[in-house]
Image (cartoon, rainbow, N blue to C red):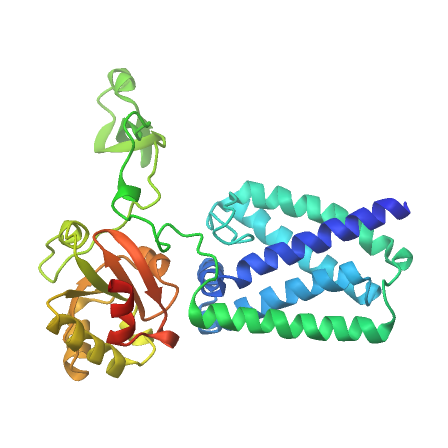
Length: 370
């Protein structure tokens, strides 16, 4: 039994540390996942606290894992582990049943798990944690209390500093398709021979207040008592989906400017502001860079999910010489984990990215151009 407890302790401790570090590497991405859960459970009042909660959960998860490996505070730690895994098992179980949240975010964007996979992962963890919970008295600390306290204190400082650093200055490791060096245009292409989405025509008929969905071969079996309601295409097999499949931008008149942005082979800057009203206020830095950049004959594109009529008022009030285009919030959030964020591109290749906390001057940008 001793060896089973030791293995469980090492396995769970290492997994918690890895999971926590992956999420701490991208706390803003993890906060987006928490916002999804808050919306599903109708708790919008928690949304403003999502980033703070994400940071706390990451730090807490790592420290619990470190304490488990050290054998520190085994009784308290066993209870914390059990409460955490029961909560997350119920959460992922709900997602597996309803499929309302398609990715739990357990391992960020590094490892995507389907709801059912997340649920079974938590069931396995629950089994190991139950072993730890019932056998915690057999766990012997690796060091005395003084060294344990110092180790936990230093771990907390390091992990907290790392979490705040990535929150302010972007993830150290970017697992998203818009990372530096990637070609956006090539990642939007579907390779030749790849399976495509397969659809089936479905006809909707109604009788006695009840609607039926029928295939084309079943229509001939109906009599005149059925009333035709509608026809739709139903997805029956998902085809290949490119890593970037939702990158489209439009001007105020609804004209698509995606090709204009990506096919221009010169250097360009792309300013991303998911929601203008939630954007960190560095308009002075944005305006200064925009003036100098455009004076050099290059273009600066503004991307936002805020309606462009509201953006125009914001642009005018802050004297920003930026032309804004509208885009869905999801790809903007994936491009730069910051609001606002900035991307230097050459053609359709991402050269460099900056967050609002290290927003560059014109001279810094030109170092990457030259």
